[in-house]
Every structure is written in structure tokens, then in C-alpha cells.
Length: 277
Image (cartoon, rainbow, N blue to C red; front, side, top):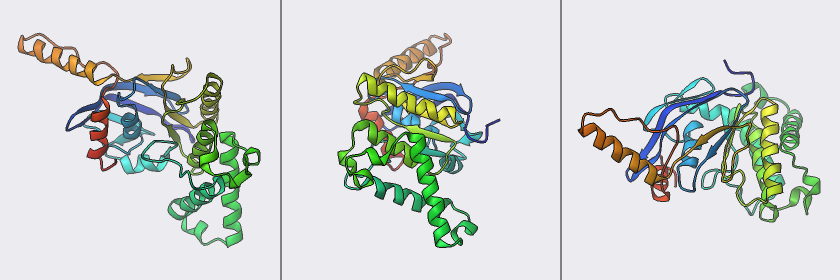
């Protein structure tokens, strides 16, 4: 059973296929509430598609998964309400022309508009503003971002942020909704060794507070993470070929390993199949 904060995540033989091939296949793992889940694999191996499938944003083709005790894909809408996206290229990117303050105000407004109760919406304006400010402050504190330290404080444009600062802002935006799970794509992309350690420390601090974190990484995952490894398209095709050959000879074929797969073309096609580019 999930804690009040984090969401357990599990998958069994999960796969997603587009018209040009598998984005990922044979993913099997289990992680408890408040876990740090790291998705490892080569570029183009379906890592982002897996992240989106586990957060209810893409529909898998085979297997099963649960996030927060909610079965996917049947309860995808409910999963989206408890799983927030941090930075995901092409899906939830920061607007480089907007300032830090504008991003925060926009997210707080959307949160109040779509997730607030009727009673909250009818509260006096001053109370609503105070509540939104408190949420923003708590999210910034959890993400380790102090706007006062930025070049132009809250008026700093996203284009002027360092990579790690942008990551912290994206995480803060995700936390405004107080989700049970935060998903972060390319968590360590274009970071120095020291910055990579800081990024993982940030994500680890969220799990210490009870929030489950699902992070795609390019480098090695931390030793304390639940690691899910994905495979390149060529490895999947080879596995499928072996399965076909052994089936024709009457020999039992081993199922796909607990990992994923795809080339860039296959991943793009899988995004298209779900209505995302």
C-alpha cells in the first residue's frame, strides 16, 4: 500500500510498439513508494517513452504496469493526476522567453484552476494569493532554487539559466501540484561531474520527503536507485529473431529480458502513435 506521499511503481513485460518497431519491450521491475527509479540505456532506446508510459502519457502495447496502485493504461487519467512531469523535451519544456517568476505564477494559476476544490476557488483573493505563494515557496525550497541568487532574481529569463538551475526550476514547477511521483527526463544531460552529483542529490532529497522519483539518465545510475535498463533496437530485433527461429523448431524460446529498446526513428513513431510529436 502506498504512503500518503509516494507512489509505488511496477511493470511486468511492458512494451510499446509503433508502426516502425518497438519503442521498448520486456520491461519488468517493482519499486516501492518514495523510491528513486533510474532508467538507463543508450540514446534512442525508448527511455523517454517508458517514462511517459509509466506516468500515463503514452499507451503501452503489451504487458501491464501500475503507478500508485492504479492499473495502466486503464487508469491513465488518474495516474496523470498524481504523477507530475519535470523536464521532458517536446512535452513539458520550459519556455526560454519567459522569466522564472512567470513560469511559477502560470503553474500556480493552472494548479488552482484545474486541481483546486470549489471551496478553494471561492476563497477571498488575498487568501488564494497567500496559498499560491506558500506552495511556490515550498516547491522552490524542495528543489533547492533560490531566485534571489539568479542574475536578475525572479526576472531572470529561462534562456539565461544554467543547466542545473533550469533543472531545479522544472522540478519546482512539478512540485507545486504536490504529486506522488515526479518524472524527470535527461536528468544528468550536459552536466559536469560535480553538477551530476548535485542533480542526483536533488532527486534523492525528494525521495527522502516521500515523493517517488522516476529519472532518465545518460550516465551510470546511483547505487541506491532502482535501475531499469533499456536496450537498443538492434538488440530487440536480434532477440525477436532468436525467438522466431526456436519457435519453428519446437524449442521453448526465452522471453525478452527486463529492459527496453528502440532507435530514434522508432521512438519518434511511438510518440506519433500517441498524438505527441
